[in-house]
Length: 631
Ligand SMILES: Nc1ncnc2c1ncn2[C@@H]1O[C@H](COP(=O)(O)OP(=O)(O)OP(=O)(O)O)[C@@H](O)[C@H]1O
Image 1 (cartoon, rainbow, N blue to C red):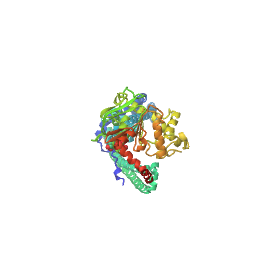
Image 2 (cartoon, rainbow, N blue to C red):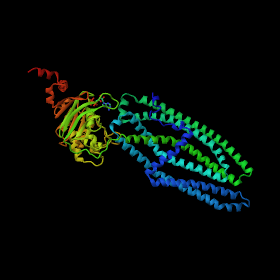
Image 3 (cartoon, rainbow, N blue to C red):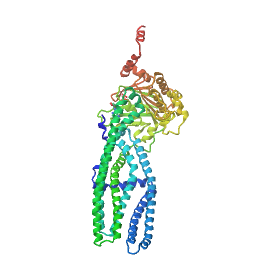
Image 4 (spheres, protein in one colour):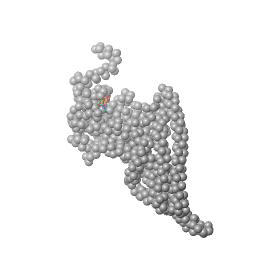
């Protein structure tokens, strides 16, 4: 039933580290380190510098500690009575302790610097990502490819960006540790360097195998987890609750959920057993490598190439080197894969920058006498037939104009074009002679209020739901909100709520309230009115309202507007509600085929008159018709 969900179409980088070769991983690590370094530098220079300096210092302390340990061994293995040898070694022992303490302090400083930088990088990336995506043009948002990319970046890129800083720090520490071990070994005797390689490479190879197996398994485990989430999310969703119960779908979902969790448990066990086997194999291979190294070391000691103390020191350095390499391999794979996601996030951000709404020094005015639409043609991306095909009309301050017409005739597209959400490919929309394409898009949006048929149900307080369109959730004018609510008939909705204006309109929160579709519509109309915009666009806002509420809203829009010079555009299929509009534009196939007042259009006896008569006849009873028939 859910096999199709196994691999999400956007999970392009999951498990990438399992298939990358070691040279591929190694080649990318410096670039990734620089990338994360740049992000860290931008987020917090001081902490980044502290982290780098302390990391280098800690690696130096580790290397000095190793050298001091060799000196301790030299004193301990020297000729003479044991108490004298121990006394002679004491300064070096204190030095080792000093280096180890300094290293611990420096590592703590790295951890503190990292704790400062990581949340800043995450916050900056997340805020920038949301800022960019929230301001991308509507046309781009409606492109499914863009949506996939953004979802991927949000789900993965931001998540791994938070983890990768610590991983890069670990990677650096492992590289520096390995360099330190190699340095100490070559100081002891240059011939020991190949021995170090002989000892660490089998361990490295085992670690590569282990890491790959874990990534492969993770990919599968993750896919299963994602599937389980779909079911638990549906089972817990408040909006789905009624339908799940009425259609008794719960048991089907629970069965599938159980089947998947059992598979996850099996996968967990398989992972654990496989990992234990690989660990054993790794240790065996590593053990053979170590055996060969120690045999070679013994041969060098016997041949007199190396003093005994240096041999013991070499063992310490080789062990430290092996630990560093194992860490390098493990973290290197993680960094490789996670960096692909971070790269992806940065690429999506860059793409969003190219899709942002237009900015300009020309701001949309707060008062407009006339909006002129001239010969506008608009075709949706990927479509051949234009949604609007050469339309022209003028809207004047204080006017209420209705858009009517058949489904798909272009009314909503025209409203969105007026709202500055789309740009015409041909023709122009001018506000008092200024083309909206020359104006700052955001300033145009601030001057236009849109109320759509399916308004967003913000999980905020009733007050914030009415005032959200003014660009702030905190700086509100309660009297204006009250006036807007009264005009939209939302005041009675608010009065009936337990917390009134403070009531949270979402069942997801404690004491949250649930509104009906019609009540939400009234809140949305109030939100539109609250903005006191230059242009108010109402796209079938009353479709779910009861007849008295609908009547009250149209009364408010036509007569009780909060701003007398506001231009109001009403898109509606209920022709009774547009009768009192100053003008009615009739759309057909992306063109305006009729224009005039209700009386003028009825006299014209064209499409509008036909639609109006058809709707009106639906309201007549047989008795009324009979009454009309009898003079
Ligand atoms: N986002 C979109 N992407 C592609 N085509 C679209 C999009 N929105 C609308 N269209 C198409 O544009 C044409 C006009 O649609 P529009 O929504 O403007 O009509 P409408 O008159 O408002 O219809 P309705 O009365 O059903 O709301 C239709 O053919 C529709 O399929």
